[in-house]
Length: 290
Image (cartoon, rainbow, N blue to C red; front, side, top):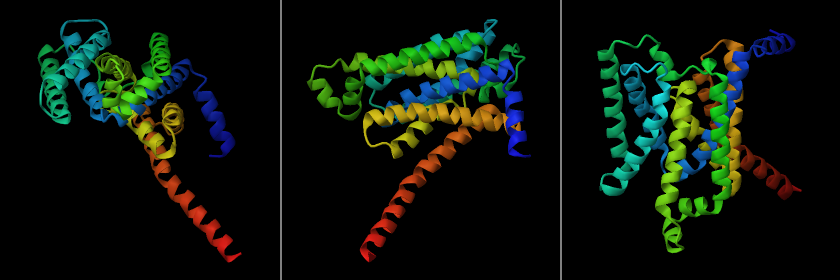
């Protein structure tokens, strides 16, 4: 297919409202995930977002068993409760964080499957739970995602220096009188809301990638913390847009396409320093010969 034909097909495809909502929803989700993911990765909480994504399936299954017309309504309060409980257990037990999270999300997922099998009420596709259905996003979902992005941006913008200090040197933050408990729980609550609102579009299995991969790519490319945060959010939005374009062009699943686009950006970020160093060596060699 020629470039003109490809462009025409994409224009026609994204003229449909549901594709426009999917594209905008992916960009909003990717940007918010990248924004908070920049702190999540450095604070070594990457597994938390993945565990939360898996565990929210229990909230969905409980909503289905209770006959809630929209089980996703249960996800937000469940995610908040999960975040607060996990934070409490991390602080009050001597268990390693990764072991604790592994135990919680594995058991939650097992209970969710049992509840679904016993309830007999679920008539939807299991794939939509596991991998999401970004094409099913409605205007209400976009409004919620936009408001959440605004709240997260204000939180990070107004407390950036505090968040940087907590991330890079928590003992110094404590010595300066910063309320570590308050800031840690506020961040956990926001992260849980981001993950919970992304479940419908991305699914429980892939939502962790939206938080982790853009942040990892940005960390390889940035030279200061502020640039790292902004680049992480930008790469999250860019990968979502590229993934949706690939999905529409080749008729691929949207969520996995976005994650593959994120992986491609990460691999590109890995290669960029090598290419840059190779170019510098060529220039230095040329200068030495000259």
